[in-house]
Length: 166
Image (cartoon, rainbow, N blue to C red; front, side):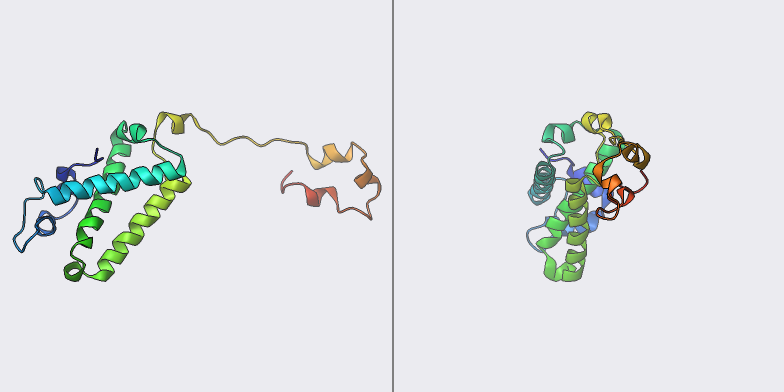
C-alpha cells in the first residue's frame, strides 16, 4: 500500500511535468490514472519501509496509522521518492544534475529516518524519552579513600577519569 496517492503527488508537484513523466510515449498521460505513477508511489513506499525496517524504528502498520503533520511529512517523502523514480525514466530530458540532486536529498531524508534524527509521532516514539544520567561526583569518589586517591603520583587524577561536568 502506497503512503501517498497520485492526487497527493499532483498537489505537490507541477501537473504538466508529471503528465509528461507519466506517459510512455511522446504524448503526456493523466498522472491521476497512470500505472507508471502508481508503481512509482508503491516503489517509494517500499523504499521508506525498507529504511524504517533497517533502522528498526517503525513498522509499516505504524507508518500507515500516522495522522496530521506526521502523515503530511510521510506523504512529502513518498512523493519526492516517486518523483525521483519518474525522473529516472527520463534522465536525458530532465538532466543528470536534477536527478542527482533529488537522489541526494532523498538519501539524506532516508538516512535521517534510519538513524532517528527524524522521528514520526508514533505511540512508541511519544513514550520514549531521553534517559537521565546520574552517578557519583568527584567528591564522592575522593571520600572513599581508594588506592588511586592515596597514591596520586601513580594514577591519573580522579577528575580526568570521570565524565566532564561531574
